[in-house]
Every structure is written in structure tokens, then in C-alpha cells.
Length: 389
Image 1 (tube, rainbow, N blue to C red):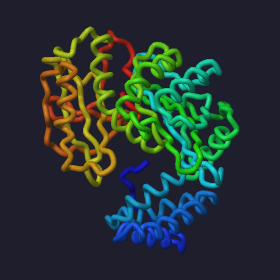
Image 2: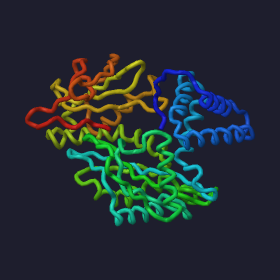
Image 3: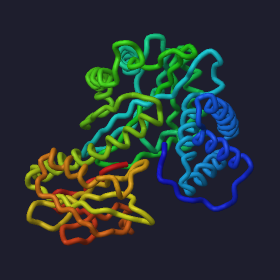
Image 4: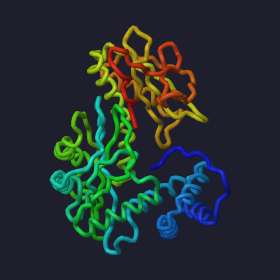
């Protein structure tokens, strides 16, 4: 998924230069007929690099275009993502797509990343095909609810996973995930879990229900919340949860990132209400921008009304093209007020992007204009887990 990129050292290789030329040509194209030429050659080049696991070449081309502020960056990023999630080469007769169904969850306990039983998979299959997918879709589900750390890391691993799951879809079976050696997941107050699947349809046919007459994304999300959410709930005991509309892998992941920001604020306010018997009206929020080379994120320190000690914090990262011009403080304030927090302080000071040297937790703004460690009072036991993965 697209992220703010840091420039890497080293010159560009011939294949990276070719990607840059093709993506720039597509961005500057003046007609659909010319688009088709660039599309064809760009897809072929990306497919070859994905098959050869040339991750460094793909990233070098993206880094160069990003640092040059080139319109070719968005074109290349879109094409790399689309080729990685569409399992090129799996079938000449079918369109194959890796999809994700993200789940936002929060809990005072550990949020599970867990194997999904055949019975639950069967129920999820029914509701995905009834409420989200188009009529002629073949579907394969991975039998694991992934944490972010357990997802494929990089474009080539994503393409490899999409191909494996796509082959399972064409064969009419689900995919078993071996959990031995899988990365451990740290404990966070709120986090995202991912149900992954692959779908396959005859070339050119509809993939999702909203592509068919009478369908819509809003209708699919409404039904998935009711039916799919009920199926997923037993996998997340002791958790409050909210589902995100299943979609193509990278699009769904980006939407989950976006939705997780207000969700983390709501989770934090609810957590303090339960843990400290502090209703939202008894909380105060301090919002401040945090910079490295440029603005990276906003952090929210939460205190009890009338006290200066920060008891909990939330990070609101900037995503995609967001920058100083995005009205993030207003968005954060609107979410806080919707939660019932009425005392809100906005600090204009540019704080450095600093973390605790001992535990690595973010430091949060205090009402006094300092950045401090969030600490729960001793009577409430150990410090709360950090807000977001």
C-alpha cells in the first residue's frame, strides 16, 4: 500500500529506469489508445520483476519517482499493487484477485490472531458470496485471521500468496495456513485483523456484487456488518469489533488504515471509561503535530479533567497524500466530540517524533506543552497497551 517513502541510496539499474520511463509515459499519455500501449508494457515489466522477486528494483523506481514528485509515482504504485494482488499467470481464462476483509478490534486483553475452523469458514463463505461477491465468483479463504505483522511483507511475497490462494480458488478449496514460525503479534489496545481470500471469475466478468445491477457498496457493507460480523465475533472473544468492507487487498488495507484512526480514539475513550470509571465528559484531550523531516502524524494525549498527567494516548498517522494542508486536527476533534469529550486543547508547537527509550512507546503531548510517557495510575495496574499496531 502507498506510504510516505524515504529515499534510498544507490544508483538506478536498467530495469528500474525502464519502469520509470513506462510509468512517466503513462502519466503523460493524452489518449486511451496511447494508455493501452503503456499499460501493456508496464504490466509485462512488473510481472517479470514480481516473478523474479525483484523487490529492490520495484522500490528503487518508486523511490525515484516519489522524490522527483512525478505523476508517474501514482501510476507505478497503482500498477505494482494491482499486478501483485491479481496473481498474473495463474489462469489465462480467469481474472483472479486477492481480497481482504479487515476487522477493527479493541480489548483490554490480547486480541487474537488465530486459525479459523472449517465450520466458521463455511459460514463466512456463504455470507461473502451472498452479500459481497458477484454471482459467478469462485472463492478460496485462508483459514487464519492475520495480524498486520503476519501479512505478506512486500509486493513479491504478496504476489506469491495471491497466486497460491488463487490456485485454491480455481480448484474449489480453501487454503490451510501453517502457523509454525509465524511472527508473534504484540499486544495493543486496538488493532486490525485480516481475513484473506482469493476470488476468480471468467475473464471480464463482475467480481463484486456492487458491479451488478441493483448492488451497491453501502448495501454490501451493511449486510456484511450484520452477517459477516456475527460469524467473526466468536474468533475475537473479549473484543469489541467493527468490520471493514471486503475489497481488493491493497484497497481494503488502506481503508482499514483510514478507519482505524477514529476507531482507535473511540476505543481509547471507551477503555478509560471502563478501566478508570471516567466517562468521556471527565476526560481532556491534547492534540499536537509531530514531525521528522516533515509532518508525520498527530498524537493525542488523554488526561482526566483538571489533571495534567497523561494516562493514555492515541497516534493519528498521516496517510497517502495527507500533509500540513489536511485538516487532521479538525477531524480528530470531531471524533473526540462525537465520543463525548468536550475539553480539547490544540497545540501548534512542532514536536519531534520521539519514543520512550525503555519501551519504545510514543511520547504524547501534555496540557503543559511537553511530550511525556502515558502512564495509568498505579491503582489501575500495569500501563495500558499501546493504542494501535
